Amino acid sequence: MSDKASGHEPVDGTSTVTPLIQATNIEVVYNSIILAVRGITIQLGKGQTVALLGPNGAGKTTTLKAISRLITPEGGEVSKGELTYKGESMLAWDAYKAVKRGIVQVLEGRQVFPTLTVEQNLLVAAYSNKIRRSNIKSALEKIFEYFPRLKGRRNTRAGYTSGGEQQMLAIGRALILEPKVILLDEPSMGLAPLVVEEIFEIIGDLSQKESVSILLAEQNASIALRYADYGYVIETGRVVMSGPAATLREDDNVKAMYLGIDESGLRQEFGADTRRKERADVFAM
Ligand code: ATP
Image (tube, rainbow, N blue to C red; front, side):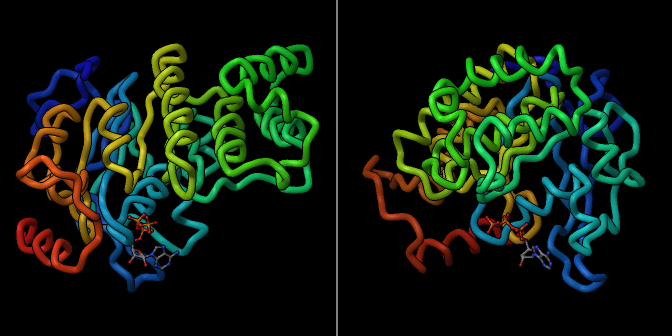
C-alpha cells in the first residue's frame, strides 16, 4: 500500500493534504424519498486506488454517481454533507462539468454501443472529448497498448465481443477521455476469474503509469483489496469499516464476511443467511 498524497489523514482540519475527492458525511436521496446513502465520508488521494466494498444495495453505486454527478438524471440528489474536488465544492456541478474536470465513471454492466465496432466505440468517446484529429490515432494506440485484446477485435461489433472485452472497452472509453479520476463500478461483475485477474492487472498498471486515481466499487473484496491502497466497507448506506487495504485483508470480520475465510483459515461459502445476520450484528451502529 502506498501512502502517496495519503488523502487519509483526519477530516478535522489538521490535514495538510487536500484529497482529490472528498465526500464528507454525504446523504443521497432518490426522488426526495429514498435515502440510499446515510452519511458517508470517504477520501481519494492523488494516484490512489480506493475500494468501496459491500453487499448489494449498500450504496456503492450511488456514492460513485454522486461524485460523477450522474445522480441528478436518476432523480437523486446529495441532500446533506459536502462533496469536493481539489477542495472545490462539486455539489452544483452537472455530469458534463465533472467529465470536463477529469472525473469519469465506468458504469456497472459494461455499457458499450453494441452495434458499433470496438474502434467506433472508442472514436465516439474521443470525439466527445474533442481530441484533435491528428491525436486520435495515438490515443487509440495507447488504449490498444493497455488492452491488446481490443486491438485484435477493433473491427468487431462490440455486441459480439466477450464480457471481458466489453469491460475492457468500457474502461478504454473512459481512458480516452484522459481522466484524472476513474470511478469504476463492479468491473468484475459476471466475469470468469481469469478475466477478472487480467482486468485488475491492467487497472493496476493504469493507476501507476497514468497517475490516474481510481475509486472502485466491488463486491469481490478479495481482488479489490489486492489492488487497492485503501478500502471502505459500506453497508446500508454507511461506512462501517475503513483502513489500508493490507489491514482490511487481515481483519477477521472482513475475512469472515467479505473474503469468505473463517478462523480456521478455510474458505467458506459466501452469502449464507446466517452470515448476513452475523454481519448485521457486528456492524450494527
Ligand atoms: P449493487 O451492487 O447492487 O449496485 P450498491 O451498493 O451499488 O449495490 P446502490 O445501487 O447504490 O447499491 O443502491 C443503494 C440503494 O438505493 C438501494 O436500496 C437501491 O434500491 C436504491 N437505488 C439505487 N438507484 C436508485 C434509483 N435510481 N432510484 C431509486 N432508488 C435507487
